[in-house]
Image (tube, rainbow, N blue to C red; front, top):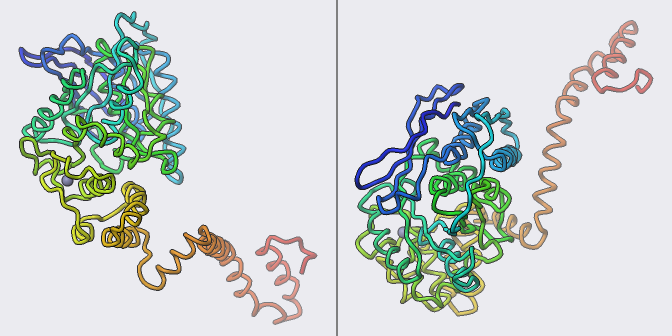
Length: 446
Ligand SMILES: [Zn+2]
C-alpha cells in the first residue's frame, strides 16, 4: 500500500486535508481519503501524514498488504506504537494468521513545538463519551493542560446522513457551550478504508478515532476516547487500553479513559449532571432522528440505556429519547443480544430485582438466556454448568472431543489392520511392523 499526494485544500466554508491510498496486493481501486472541518476551525487541521497512516496500516494488515509506504516523514514514537498495535491485533486474531506489514516513510519527523496544549475528547453524546467530560470537569482545574477544551464530533462513522448528523450536532453544541468546550465537527470518509462492522468493532475503531485527532494536530495535544468496557468485561476490541495509546505520537497523546467504571456506574454519574441527560445520544438508528430527539427509544441500545436510567430513577429526564417507556414486551421484541451488549444487560439484573421490577428482570433474563443458548432443558444444564460449575462440563466436553478427534485416525488405522494380523504365518511380521508404525511405537512394543 502506498499513501501519496498528501495535501490541504478546501473552500470558503470548509478546510480539507486529503491523501490518496493505492493498494499493492489487494485488487481494490485507489481512493482519495479526506478530513474536513468548518472554516472557523481551519487553523486546527493540517495534512498530517499520521492521520492517514494509522487507519491505513490497520486496514492494510486485514487486506494482506506487505508494506505501508507513505510519502512523508513520520514520528518515530508513532511508528513504534503502530507496529506494537498491529502485532497486538495479530495476536488477538488467533487462528487467522496474517502476514507482517512493514511501515516505510521518508524519514523521521521532528515533533512540533507545543504552544498552548489543548485537550480534546471524542464527543459522541454517548454514556462513555459524556463520562469522559463529566469526570474531567470533576477532577481537572481549568488551568490544567488536561482540562478538556474541545469535543470532536465526527461525521461519516455511525451517522451517515447529514441532516441526522446536524440534529446531533445541534444538541451537543448546546451541551458544549454550557460545559465550556468547543464542539469541533470533523467530516471524513476514512472509514471507507473498510466498512465491515465486525472489523470496526474488533480492530478498527480507535485507529479511526485517533486519525481524526491527528488531522487536528495543529490544534489539540491529546485525544481521550471513552472506554466501552470496564475491567470485568474487557476483551480484545477495536478500542482497548492496551491498543489506543499506541496510536499516539510525540505531538498527540491518545488516552483510553474510564475503564474502571461499569456502564451502569457511568450512567449513574451522568444522572447527577442534568447537562448530560439533555445531550444523551446512544442510538444508531439515525433515520429516526428529529430536532431535539436523537434516540429512537426502541432499539436495543436505547432500551438498555432507558432501563439503566429507570434503575437509577432518572428515566423521566431522558429528554432526547423519542420514547421513554420500557416494558417486558419491548425488551422481548428488541433486545437481541450479542457479545458486546450482553454484559451491559447482565449488570441491570440485580438492581431490577432489588427494586421489585421482576417483570423487567424476567424479560432481561430471558434475553440473556437466548443469547447464551440457555433455553430449554439442555439450556438449563448449560446454565447450571456456567453458574455453579464455572464451565467445568463445557471444558471437559471440549477436552474429550479434542482427544477423540486426535485419536480417531489412529484407532481407525489399527482397526483396519486387524484382519491382517495372524492371517498367514509369513505375514505376521509385516503386520507387526505396520501396527508399530501406525501407532508410532518401537518395533518391540507389540
Ligand atoms: Zn435507538
